[in-house]
Image 1 (tube, helix red, strand yellow):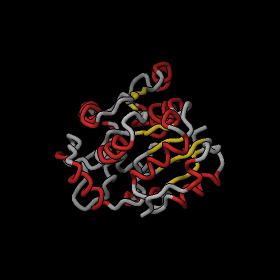
Image 2 (cartoon, rainbow, N blue to C red):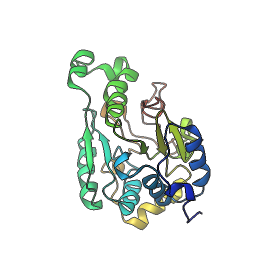
Image 3 (cartoon, helix red, strand yellow):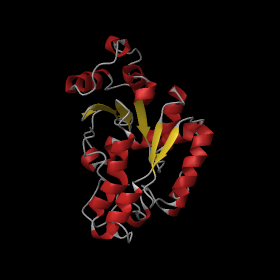
Image 4 (cartoon, one colour):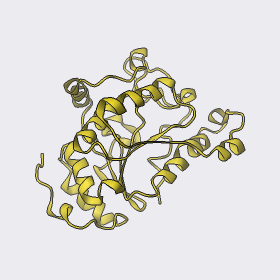
Length: 246
């Protein structure tokens, strides 16, 4: 595991739209700890140009805790789609206070867009991809405009499109850091235990991955942790990790 930051990380921030920058960072941080990766992100673009995007879901607390230990003022972007469980909103407030996060920004879809495209609030059923776009993808793209890089909590053990994610990648005009990419599921559980972090309130009810209420269901023993997301809809991602931000 690397402990010293590569020399280029302490230099003036490079242009994040350059894919070679992402590739070089990925090579340098391939075996770094999550805290080292977040610290490198801060050095690369500066705290004010770095955002952490968090769902405050079942596996969010560990990364939020690590980030808070690096710098509790890193901006945290939280998407309130209008369809979230009340327990998720309460968990956001609990973790914000517990971890001492000082810049949590809750963003929302545009009301005029909802009135135009989802007036009856049934778009999740007829067109889940478009529902995710207006409630997640577009609001996040809007929220990320001031930032040069962002951090998220995807992990390779989640499988599917996430099985081969790098530690650092180019995301349109931004750098995208995946500090937990190479953390194993058992290691993540150990982190929760070591940090004494409270679980999401719905974990005890059988939810292993939590998104919007209409598109989230409980998982059965032995199922993939994300099996309850968009169950039987042929959909595994909301779109924020496949649509390139500009």
